[in-house]
Image (cartoon, rainbow, N blue to C red; front, side):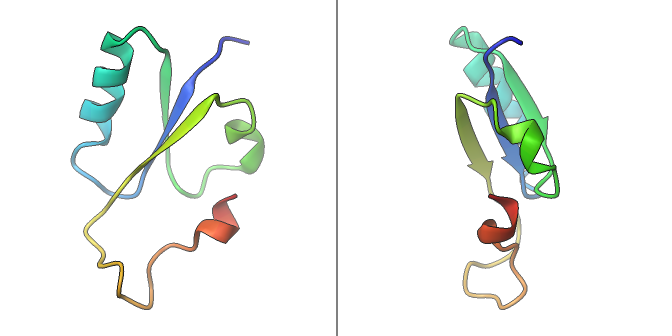
Length: 68
């Protein structure tokens, strides 16, 4: 399997742009939703969290513990 950088898209309008910039640096990228299964992210060499419109102070933000 090819090494890759995972980009977790939490609803940001920049997730694809971030992945494209990383690819221009020579790394392979894959974009995942935050609900992706852990086994898909296990082989990633790095993970980029691309934020969304929710405030970090909101009570209903995604829980990273559930993701990892």
